[in-house]
Picture (spheres, rainbow, N blue to C red):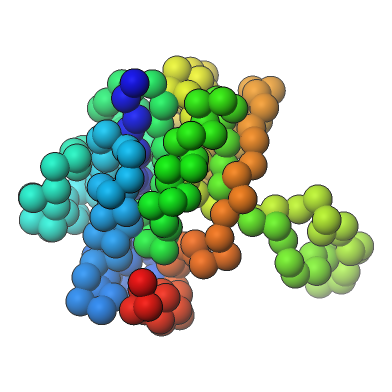
Length: 217
């Protein structure tokens, strides 16, 4: 049995600033290196990074001594990048994880690997703790019952053939969530409880939060 991890890294970090957030350093180490190191230590067999060409050379330098890492070209969208990763390495099960979520843990990755073999499709998620309002034209329409709401994170884990078929059927669209593609096709996707610490770095403020978390690991 082979387990792959796909790390989409083809974005431009437009909301972050002038520098690509994945190579922004936290405590002296690039964001994406923290992410990939976790998967290196996990039960994953191969890690496929789908890279923005502008940072490919730097990624090769960062990961030249990483035994599990393969770097391929990313696409113009996240969906295209993931498909490139799926095509770059056939396997039995695949985990798809945002490169900008460096606070992932080895334990959570390995639990996803175990559960996906039973469930075939899952996403890591946390229960919504804030009160959620539906708003239109600046006015609150209603308060949504949060007891059934979850905040989706990554990794998301799938039987390889299942997610590959979804990508082929929905090719050329702009999904930013692989589990959502399976939902669109009527497939059941399960929840694996995640961690509120597993945030995605989007802005400079997130770097400050990650610096605190990663300094204590």
